[in-house]
Length: 330
Image (tube, rainbow, N blue to C red; front, side, top):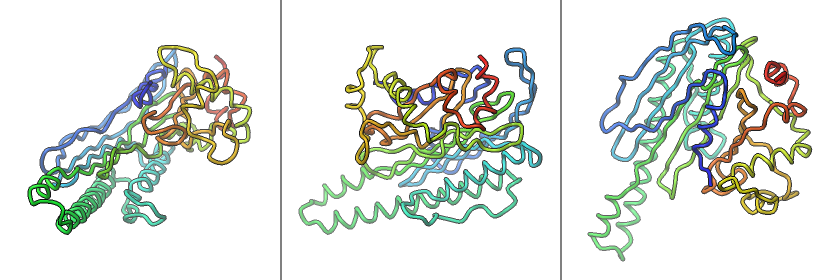
């Protein structure tokens, strides 16, 4: 069975300039702040078309306490006005909304959105890193205290057992990444994703997924696919998921596919929903990615597949068709 790595590997399919990154490094001590860099915009040439890429600045920090580990990496545009500045302001808002709800299961955010002038990438980044580090450390310490109370109050444990259990307390973790994954003639895309672990059986991946912006007007492409055409798209969704779950190229029947899926708790169990995450455009087609537990069990990873443009074209929204016009002609 394919695993989550396919989600990242699919980015290399693009004939566009692709930049990918993961945020998994941990620091063994105090806060580290020595990995800042600036990517200078220059002219790129793809298939004979010359265009300017969007200049970005990458900021990175890690923080480790006794009970927690945090890492954060953000690649943000440096422009503060025009189309690129508009893209940057939207990214800042989306990132803030995502990060401020860390470890929240209700409507209230954990801390306020950044209120300063977000034209300063460093201040913007430091604000969220500081608040996230504090939130994770506080939650992890609280979890440890609750477990400590339990082991102390339970008289069935010996002192040695209590000491052993508390010494193996799981380290909470939160790793956030915002990285530019594509910069083409008419669009730029960023991946917003986090990994979180709160002491349970396993961690989880979340975030906003791929965010695609038009380089013409800077607008975020909200909808690539017409949601009213989900039923008509079922053959394409089944074909894509079969390609993900099939072992060694062996063909899979519809019944075998649905045995791997966990959908239809209510409604038609044969209807596969569109992913909650937005599709990601590449040179070959749209990448569709389902989150953990969205259509299958945790062990299935994040099912991903590409639907070629010649097949997905009839189901695209008007805004997506305009953006992807160069690819639809192929």
